[in-house]
Amino acid sequence: MKRTHTLSALLIGAAAIIAVPTASAACDISETKCAKNGGKCNIKFRNVTAAEKGSGGGTDLTQSSSAQMVKIKAIKENGNKAGNALTIDSSASKTMNMDKKANKNFDKIRITSPSMARVEGVTMSCADVQNVLNGSGTCKVFHGYGPYGNESFEYQLGYNCDGGNTSGPG
Image 1 (cartoon, one colour):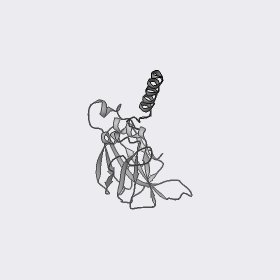
Image 2 (cartoon, rainbow, N blue to C red):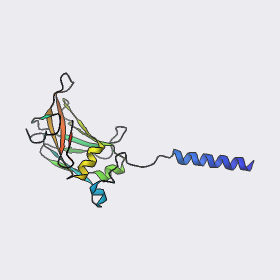
Image 3 (tube, helix red, strand yellow):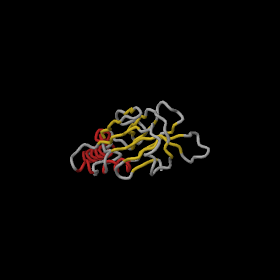
Image 4 (spheres, rainbow, N blue to C red):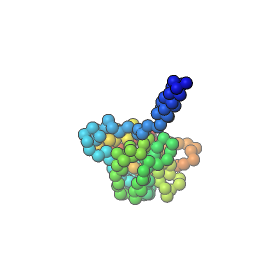
C-alpha cells in the first residue's frame, strides 16, 4: 500500500514539473552579434514618413511623403504587447532595447500609425529582428503605397533596415 502511495506521489510530482511553463523568448536573440559580443541589443527606429524617397527599396511599396506619428511595439505570439511601446514623431528617432523585450518573450515587432486609420501597419518578423541586430541596428520607417488593387487600404507603412538587408513588406 505504501508503495502505491509513493508511486502516485512521484507521478503527480512529475506531471506538475512537466506542466510548468518554461520562460523562453519566442524570438531568440541570444545568437545575434550584439548578444555574443556582450553588448546591448538595440534597434534604432527613424521615422522618415515625411520623406518622398530613399527608403522604399527592397519592399513592395513605392515611397511617398505623409508625415505622421508611428507607434512601434514588440508583441508576443498571442498579440499582446511585450513591454512599453515607442511613439515616434515624424523626422525623429528612438531606440528599442531588444534585451528587455526578449525578457518579456516577444515574437515580432508591429509598426502602426495611430493617428491615420487609412494607413496599414507592417509587422517585422523575428528573423528580420535578428538580421537587424546582426547588422547596424538601424531601421527607417516610411510611408508608401503598393500595387494592391481592391484592398481596404490605400497606404501602408514599410521599414528598411541598414543592417542585414532587411525590409518589409515584401
